[in-house]
Length: 117
Image (tube, rainbow, N blue to C red):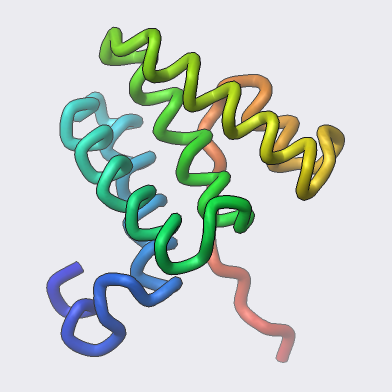
């Protein structure tokens, strides 16, 4: 991430997407404390940069709610999950693939898809 900060900046949407995915990767590797720390910081920056209702913000929030639950921060996890699901219903709809994954309390993958050649 250090190299990206110099070129794109910490709050560039690409940097925020990478940070969201890195937090999920850390959780998958069992480093839940660092996953939560990175997820919390990334969510704060996404809310400011892209807004509360942006799909990337919602994905980060959904992922963080999973990680908070895994580290035993149940009340925070439950509150964040409910807020996120309510936002999905208002913005993308409950049947949107991201909302379905979030409802199942699984990590969303926010990979970049290359443009068609």
